[in-house]
Length: 348
Image 1 (spheres, one colour):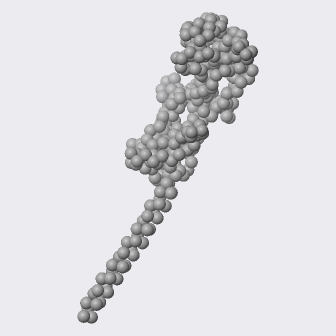
Image 2 (tube, rainbow, N blue to C red):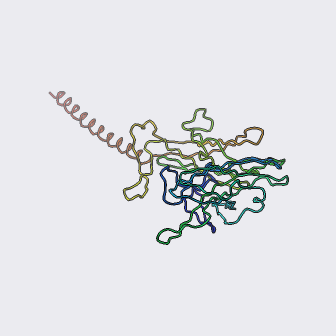
């Protein structure tokens, strides 16, 4: 993902995975018990629509996958999204105002090894609200643990929450501001970068496909690639670039891992896919859809590009030239021999 996660005073002993603009901070997914801090939390992202004056309960399942008994706390935290880069900056402060109407059933709780519990998050939205709210729900130890050698251990898990407010004036819409792909490729994959812009005032989730075609008006596409298959959300007044990759080709570049763990691009010749040989002009047509609250609205944009396997073309041309020279030489020699024989027979 292109977005990065920065720690602003909040210590996170886990890896980061951003889904589109927002996702979840992930943690150990294995059933095998860990000696360190290991929580499994679901769902990955809390998304709901609430009406002003309405109280809703969101459920969060928390399981302790470590071998240790954990005493935990759950808190609200604020985060910022850079509108240009999509970078997320997690803060150690509570979002202003949200703490007044978001509460937890068990702010402090204890889980034995392998134990799971349901945390109820109550959203009691006041009558006077905005159109969209975002915040992080952070689950962490109530105190730092000290290892045998005196090393301080700490950890936390964060789940992002997106709340749309169903009130007059709320709008859901997005635009495709740009679609780009390298103009000329030698071989696939073709990485199609699609830039969305949320022009509404609530969170939206782009959905759709990229259709690879020979021309804009083709009825049957060569390939269909899903857009936003990670199901990311767009923040209001925020752009986001997502990538769809067309890799059904012959030959095709693929990422391979060397013995030392380094990744590199390698041209793969899978002769069972020779029918997928690509050459010529193509069109990538993006068709995305959003629900404006009444009906599905399609958004369409396209870009054209070329696939020119020039080394294969040069090789074929060289073979044709060599064969042509060979056939010409053979023909001339054969023709010369026949001509000399005819001339000899005529004299005799």
